[in-house]
Length: 64
Image 1 (cartoon, rainbow, N blue to C red):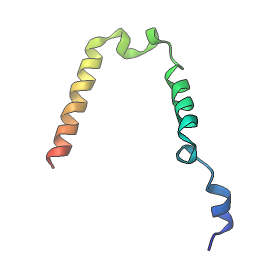
Image 2 (image 1 turned 135 degrees about the horizontal axis):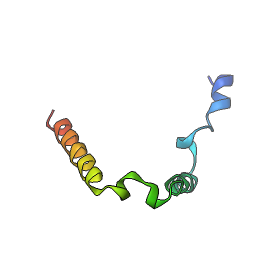
Image 3 (image 1 turned 90 degrees about the vertical axis):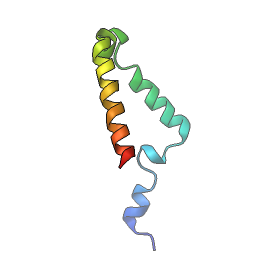
Image 4 (image 1 turned 180 degrees about the vertical axis):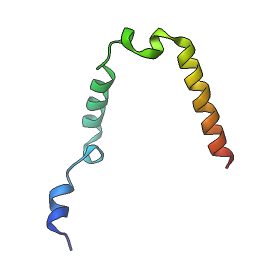
């Protein structure tokens, strides 16, 4: 049995959008900051360190 709440919310949220709508929103988010203002574009060492940390975390998670 569906409730009033179910009827009002089943078409809401990012996950309920079609793939094209999701891509358009994601594209706009990626363009919101100019490339020269992104921290990793200014500091490649910072990007390298972040990637290393992420790799370590993911390897540890897989080992469990």
